Image (cartoon, rainbow, N blue to C red; front, top):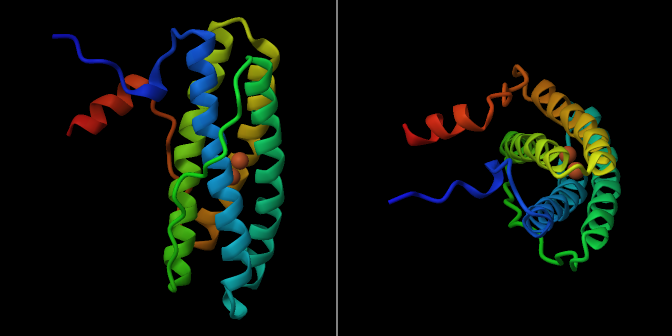
Length: 168
Ligand SMILES: [Fe+2]
Ligand SMILES: [Fe+2]
């Protein structure tokens, strides 16, 4: 029996399905806004001064992304979602930054898929808007990885590579 493909990795999709996936992206943007608003204020101590200021900037950029994504959903004739994905919290600063980095990695993977999907539907202007968001999300990844003293994670594997990895 044929298994249905994981939701976000479809390349051949309808406009309705694209709107559904954009609503998932919007919920991730709400999640990011909330996480950055809170984390930027509770990360204290000299070691975290720089990253706390960066997280405040991220919060504002995530709001811009949410506005752009909801405009695309409205353009596709659908109602933008109102619920954020769950936000994890921790008292440990490194763990907070880790949660943020995990979320950014997931966001980057999804927007890369979304650009391919928009282009498959001939929605080139939408693909361009998402490309511009993706540039900022990759900057967020770099800021967080640097604060954690880590290499920027490689999330560049295509849909097939990721599915194989997941099966392990
Ligand atoms: Fe964002
Ligand atoms: Fe981000």
